Length: 116
Image 1: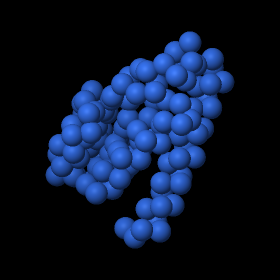
Image 2 (image 1 turned 90 degrees about the vertical axis):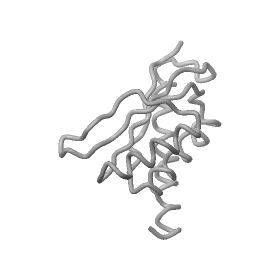
Image 3 (image 1 turned 30 degrees about the horizontal axis):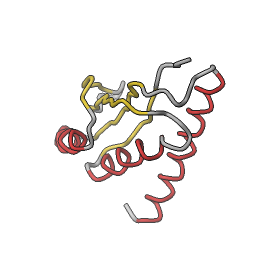
Image 4 (image 1 turned 180 degrees about the vertical axis):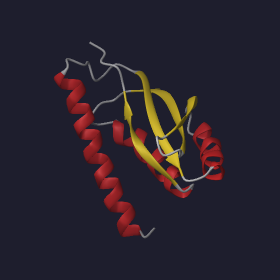
């Protein structure tokens, strides 16, 4: 994957983050409160998943579940306690996005419960 494609992907990730944070805000979330944020990453093979799993442990994420797409692609649900604010969420997701790419995977976003 070339640098331009990677930068486009990161811009898309930032936009998805903005939309997710706006949805939390619209539901009355106190965006300054730390909480568990779940992230979903999918791979074409188990080798990539295993390499990613090792990398994200170094970033402070913990495994919640091994998951699978309807098409049978293996994946992970990982989490870490973070703040989902506009100012901070990119710092949380972009390292995961990059690590997924390095391991042949696809970062598929995050979710959080609303905290009022």
